[in-house]
Amino acid sequence: MKTQNKSQSKSKVPKDGLFPEIIRNDYQGSRKLLNKKAVISGGDSGIGQAVAVHFAREGADVVIVYKESDDDAKETQKLVEKEGRKCLLIKGDLTRKAFRNKCLDKVKEAWKNIDILVNNAGIHTSKNSLEKISDEQIQKTFDTNIISMISFTRNFLSLMGKGGRIICTTSVTAYRGSNHLIDYAATKGAVLSFIRSLADNLAEKKILVNGIAPGPIWTPLVKEAFDDLSTFGKDTPLKRAGQPSEVAPAYVFLASKDADYITGEVIHINGGDFVGG
Image (tube, rainbow, N blue to C red; front, side, top):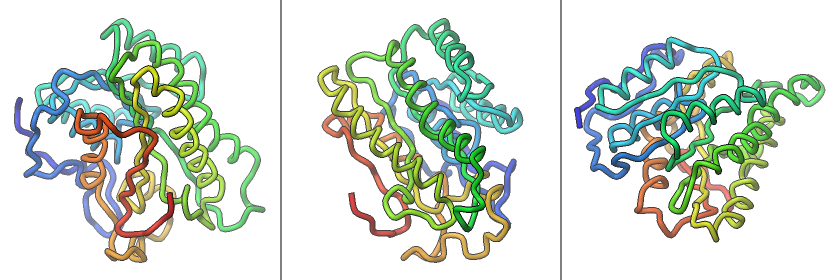
């Protein structure tokens, strides 16, 4: 496989001037996912983009499902293809049933089956009081973060067999809450319960379901959601926010044979923010 030297995405820049690091220059792929087929929702930027590039460096082909940013999606495709792997882009709104069905049809036509499904698409809007959260915001957050995830996963189970992996992105807020992301934290708590419930449900079929719970990570979603990022991540024991490149290897682990005896679990990547569960 080709070696990827580009480790930063310049499409979105945190206000401290640092580029989000997508993959470390010294990250060595070891064919952990050779010839695997992965579908990644929200794979055009941030953590999703980093997962796509890490999967590619480990030998996987990927489908990127994204909503809006063609520039970010094409950059992700470029990074994946530089690793010598294939990348199919599918643009649309996952909250729409017709689009979810379209994704299934396109992947089925291209690949027939898949090995890995990464549910990473999500949104949040910061509001410092419950009174400021509209019904419209609540509905949109739940539709995007958990309702469409359940439906999307149900659709793709038809393409997944024994040994399949489903990895869902939850959040540290599912465990400790958030006073300014109340509806978002509630959806991430629902994602956590979905992970545990589906893992038990699919265990007999030998399909493993796990999750990642990131803490403060430099992503475009963070930049767009908050006006002041000067203290972002500074309240963690490590006193800084994390990079997408520090999160994505955990997805590689859960997608690989190294995690054959793990299901219904969540890996916490949060700079030392101790949480239960």
